[in-house]
Length: 363
Image (cartoon, rainbow, N blue to C red; front, side):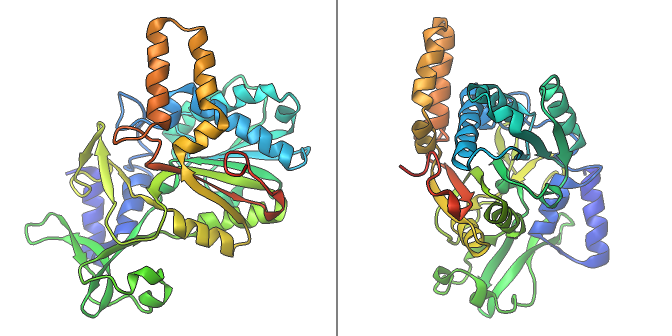
């Protein structure tokens, strides 16, 4: 039994079963035993690999995208460049290096990293040390300054806690986590239907058969970002895996050492994620006053930004072995198929309506 499981069992013993969202929040963010607060999960030696760790090309293109967006914003003299969940700092380091191609961009920047993990913040500080730029860390989007901003969120929203509901004869019941007959953590349903659930759920759920499962997240972070860009100017770019339309089906998953695991077996020691509902994200952002661009597949987004030309330029000065690695990275980031990110991952921009076109999304 992990230390966090012992804590969760004590909570259940006192308060009764907890929601899937509450369980996920504890597993990932517990201050002493949470997955992200206690380790570096990235890369071959960790549990999963994100796009910035696959190749420098990813972060470089995001940096150039941000510089182009700043120009479209009218080159404000002060800009908050924000990354949500910055991992090891790899994406930001690559982005800022590439952004030197637009010399006037860097002097306008104030970098803000939204990070809740002390362990990962140390990696970020080491990776970004020596940059001649002001960098600040905060734990929540609400702490960001009220000024024009460009936000980057790569594989951030999939790790936000997800609620689950199951349709039964009497309505939709929230899925909970309690203790089974054998004493192990187990899924169960709240005895009472969720009040008014069908009135607030997407219309397509009305005809869902009994036993259907639906997942949803709080829209607080999306709404906050949308209000900020609509008020102050700028955009937020989210890249994540998920589905374009709201639909039933379970996507909650656990990953450990690059393989799927039981999400209830070892709380605090496995990564928990669920697919992003991009339709719900777009609805929330639009209601908060932003204009939504996309979603489009990650591969299409990166090709529009010029990843193929960047790969060719890198290969021109590479050894044959390194050129093969660049080709493999290009296929992983922009290609189709089960082992590639190009189709499963989507890109969406939540932007100031006054911006008009946004690079990578609009012709």
